[in-house]
Image (cartoon, rainbow, N blue to C red; front, side):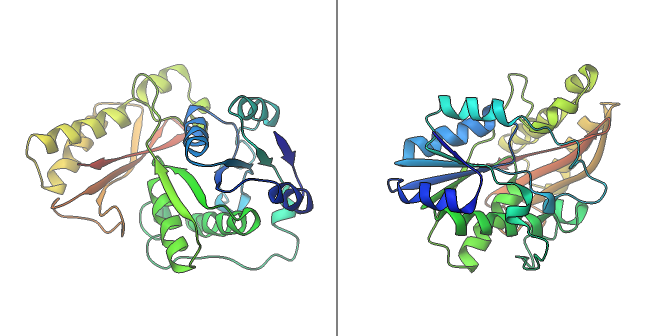
Amino acid sequence: MKVTTSFLELREARESLKATVGLVPTMGFLHEGHLSLVRAARQECSSVVVTIFVNPAQFGPAEDLSRYPRDLERDLSLLKKENVDLVWAPPTETLYPADFQTWVDLEKVSKPLEGAMRPGHFKGVATIVAKLFNAIQPQKAFFGQKDAQQAAVIRQMVKDLNYPIEVIICPIAREGDGLAMSSRNVYLQPAERQAATVLSRALFAIRQAFEDGERDAGQLKQIMQTIFNQEPLARVQYISCADPVTLQELESIENQALFSVAVFIGNTRLIDNMLVP
């Protein structure tokens, strides 16, 4: 496994990779969710590239950039076991030099939900992913369904900017009790960790209600809200039932809907989602 930090090292290493190249962008502090993306890339691609970069442009002024967990040595050990071909872990100044001033900003799909709660977040996401695509030139790129709006943003960007890249969205990796795997889960205290299962419990409840015949978005969201109300440590930021592509809110489900939530458990903000059906 080749580990690089500079553009020059990356370009030299990239030339030796066999097509098809699969890219897995990460912010490090890897967990089983990330590794499931790596395995999907390994299965579908001749070469696998993983990037590790904590992107400052997608953090708001009041968010946890300085606290975001980092452990590069551990990450590299995990990736070596997964037979990754190339890891690129550039320093911040490599991707954002002092005079940086070019951004990728999507007009519609980036604005609701996370975009409304975290202004500028998806401008940072789209810009860094575009830079990674330009630097690595993969044929396929792998992302997780847990960041559902991010997936929608990236798919739209790839379409709009004519990238010759197939975007593959892999299922959410969950703990045994249903909690979606996230690097931020390490912030949870024991009681909060137990309370955090309320997110997946609410989502599985609306899936069951849908299977039982409920199609009214308002009723389904109320089912979720009722479950959240029963958890004292949970503070709901939003509950959404939206079109999976446009992220426009739905009144009723005719085809498929994306249910997504953002909830504070104590001081830790968690997101989760589910496609129904």
